[in-house]
Image (cartoon, rainbow over all chains, first blue to last red; front, top):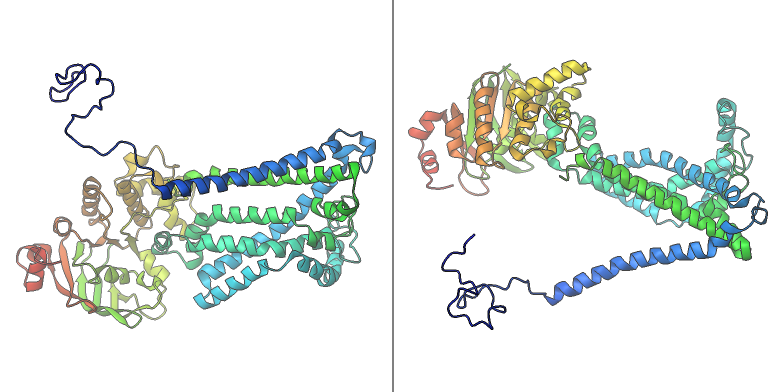
Length: 336
Length: 259
């Protein structure tokens, strides 16, 4: 490729001295061009620095928590199995707690999700605007109730109310391993799960309502113009559009249910793991920690911190799983 | 499969505001009818009353009659859902369902009519609709890919395929090419010419050349002043509107003197 004659090149330019060749810009001397490098304005620098710092703080906190859990909990992993509570090693100690935590959270999620989606659809698409706003506000208010209040309520009101229900479940569904001896006090994993469901209802509802409201009008009209009834329009346009957001909300709720401590601690009368969710027994990791932490020391303390680490990992897995579900459908999300 | 539309003294309101005043016209079957006019003159509002889509906006209502083959769309006990199954609509911006594949988009309306159809019948219908929208050759190898991955013009033809898959009597198009480039616009215009052999087509357009190219009859909407309701100023054969309009306002508009 040859350069056009009017474009001065260092070694052909008659005015160039040999010393200036290397440092001269390629532009011809007289023209002024905007500098290729953008000027760094102070506002941009400050803001990008601030946001970078905020991002790093999150990472730092996460790393510090993980380091604490691993460091302090490590003795529980390496100790002889006889020394661990229960005498069957750390795994033998932790699995009933993991099972209890996961079962309670899944029941809560399964119960709360359809109700939350229903409320969200009602508020966003069915209710007259004014009533919708009021209901939305009340649901958000539910999220502000402290968990210890839910715990007391569950213990005093919910649990006794459930005793007859448990009796009925025992009579009719006793062929399932989940429904055997009904508890006489109602302080069971089932009760705790249902209280958890009430507690995670607001967050799932709020997130779902927001995404349902964001459904593009264009898509709703597309469905209506094809002769869709209101429900068909919601099924064709609103729900598919909102699904990733609803999954996000459900995972937030699940995260809260997994980590919920006070309510479960108050309601449950803890015991060994059993599939019988209407009988006494079962425990969750947060409740186990809360009940035993104040008096724990030495290896017992390490056990509890290691249990916290396990909970941390479970939450991490749940979040990764949720992201994977959302990403799997991203081709169809309309974002492309 | 095509029907005659009779509009009699139609007034359209949004709440207390009258958007369109006293429109009467006859839209012939198997023809293309275009509406032109300046922004805000009510042509989009009017076309949406032909399948009761304007009701989606809270507070919107009409007075007067729209008869399709003698049956009043606004008669007592007429379900807007049934009206929209007879009168399909294509919107200004292409709006395929983003979560559905190309094939599912085409079949979306048919599935709403809750007919259970075999996979083979569905495939045939999808192919027929896509061929009808001149899109088949471009998408036949990627029917399972998302509709939102197509170009704007292809998406708009996908929306037309979706509209004709339910075999409506009438197809309404509200500025279908305003978001498209000239080549895609040409493809849609060719398609409109083919559609009129089977359907009654009504199109709103900002582009007067487009109205002149595709339509048999043209209606000119105008409003006397901002805040006043829009009116149908003149409705005649396209040839006549563009060559020898009888109203001064029409002539001013098509010759570019205002609007």
